[in-house]
Structure formats: C-alpha cells, structure tokens
Length: 155
Image 1 (tube, helix red, strand yellow):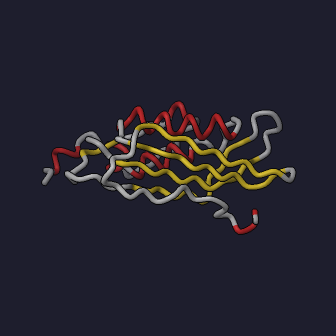
Image 2 (cartoon, helix red, strand yellow):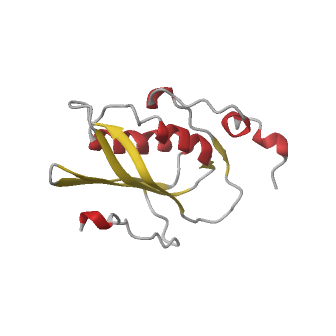
C-alpha cells in the first residue's frame, strides 16, 4: 500500500484552481505508481473529443478510446483530461492527433502495451478512424477488441 507522500508528484490532481493548458505541447501528463502486481487492461473512453482542422479551422469531433496494460506506472486521469482538453483550439490532422496522444502517454508511463482508437465523426461525407498501438500484449491478458462504429450516427 502506498503512503500519502508517494503522491507528492501529483500536482494537477491536488490543485483546486484548475488551469486549462493552451496547447497540447504545454499540457503536463502525470503518473502514479501501479499498485497491482498482475497484468490488466485500463480503458479511457473520451466520447466528446474536439480538435480543429489545421486548414479550415472547422471543429472536428470524435470518440477516443485509449487502452493500455500498465507496467510500473498508470496515467493520472485529471492530467489526461486536461491534456485531451488542450486539443480544443489546436489545429492538426486526425492522424497526427491520434499518434501524438499515444506517443505522449507512452513516453509518460512506458506501458507494456497501449492502443488508441480514434473514431472521428463524419465531415464532408467521410469519417476517419485511426488505430495505433505500441508494445506487446502479454499472453495472459484478454484485451477487449478495438471499438468500431461507436457513433450511431455514422452507421
């Protein structure tokens, strides 16, 4: 069991005056020690993701699903929320956004395995889905399949 002092590095979670980062590169991701000594899957579902088209400035909406198998660390969810929120006024193509997110999380926690499923809503008659993975799934772990077509409006 961890002591309260083991959480001293979680500055965002302890801060009562939340400051939203202006851009993804300014957002800080925080982590905490994984207390479970067996392999398991963590899933974050972000159904209201927003970013901007880098050319037109039009908003792009999507559903992000991030699955990972922790190693030594887990992602602290409030810092993840603020990191994801920082894309609201950020212009980038869908492919760049999804790969930037997975790379930042991977660099922060070095999980055994991580996957992002980015299902962007239709604009101009085309929806774009991005699937990216890093690492290897341990043999003893049952990973749920990558979600597809979660947006009923896309079917």
